[in-house]
Image 1 (tube, rainbow, N blue to C red):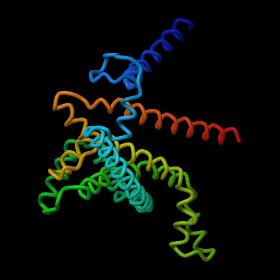
Image 2: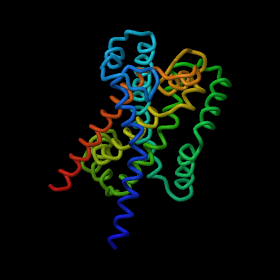
Image 3: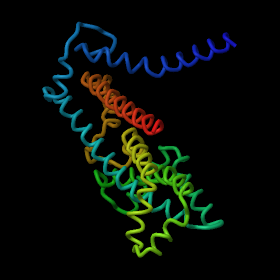
Image 4: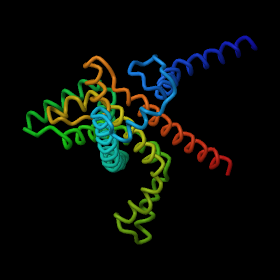
Length: 266
């Protein structure tokens, strides 16, 4: 048993090392101003200073790409959370084959490769003569994020008392009041999880953004990094930016887990 436990723990640490070693490597070399990764020229905060001061055109373009990425992700995740919640309520109230068909249709975009989704939306926008830019990218992100929200809200609907909505109506609430004051609070945990997942998916996307942004000059972090790599290198300021993003995500996850553990103890 001891040997089995040692092997399982060693395997776990190996997986963690493979996952986090590249991130730690980038974080360490974000404190040196060497242009090539792996070349240590001494401790300095010059890259952080350059990133936030916009001292170079590359750092300004990088910050602009970050701003675009966050704005698109926030709008797309907010709208997809609203649409996904309403869609989940509608699907939940269906019966028989119609419900199964809608659940199957909701699963297709999640199983579909990003490249196919991106090309499909690109062809759709061309067919509709829809100009490609900020709006087309946001609409595309809403399209592929919404099914993930539906997937997270549906289990909460299944756990909920099915008579609670009718009870609210019987007590004099209007359908609008019953939706926002009775149903939505019950579904809030699933909606928050769906929002976070949609935000992450939008933040991480490359293929859909690449095909739906067209030649408008719109850059997100993923498309900026792709263009940077094609030029034969990476902007040095990317190292401190990736480090900061990782630390922010780590702090948020720790805060969520601590809060969840406190609620579990109560």
